Amino acid sequence: MKIKIIDPENGNIATALGISPEREKELDELIDADTQRIVENVIKNNGKEGMSEQIERLTEYSRHVNETAYICFMCGTIAGKLRTMADMGPLGLIGMMFGGGKGGA
Image 1 (cartoon, rainbow, N blue to C red):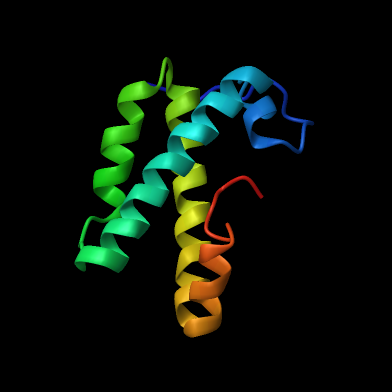
Image 2: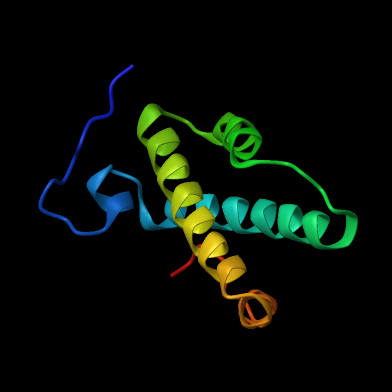
């Protein structure tokens, strides 16, 4: 399995990987919904699900290895944002409540 860069000059990771804007939106919606579910579970139930389980589950939706790479990249980006918000304490929680934990940025 090998990732193939389709448009190396493009600054958008999805486009560079040859993922259409429509498919990028679909994948982003899947990632965001799953991340929100995990965050709510952690907040309400002290859940312990990690990024590895999320990646494993979400990559079932990939149609090719480039989509798998995109999913992994976005999950890592979101995990970094969530970690930063958690380090901010209550201010981070407020940011998460207002959509700061989503991967659309």
